[in-house]
Length: 204
Image (cartoon, one colour):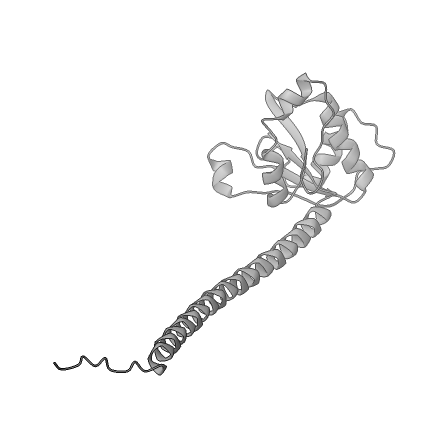
């Protein structure tokens, strides 16, 4: 009877299997780490682009704010008169305003009215269509400009030859847009007897 002989098992085989598994696991980990690093690089790149855009927007905002502030300062002595019939002023707007403003506002100016310039603004077709263009004088004396605006606020719209005459400060386009944003709130605040105003950065 032939004897059954079991071939000897090599002790190195299990170790080789474990070594291969460990190598595969390490390679998988390295691959995963590489993928995470690539994802982080993309995120960093996106953040860098976003940061650059934010700084550019901030720089533009600061420039716009400074330009708007300078423009408003340059207009602080200007006053807008709306509703004055076209050609009512004749050929000399300054002379017209010197006679017209004391009568319109009732102000007894302590010194004669003087203007650096005074003219109508707006396209000519506006006048042809029957809509009078605003007259904007630039007062040489800021106190006189302030007096006219304050009187208009307290007295309400004026009337001349059946036309309503409105008086307003002259602001930049940016500031006017901010002021318009609060128009809907003003009646409510008046009903509540609440004092309000527009202060930079334009909060009421």
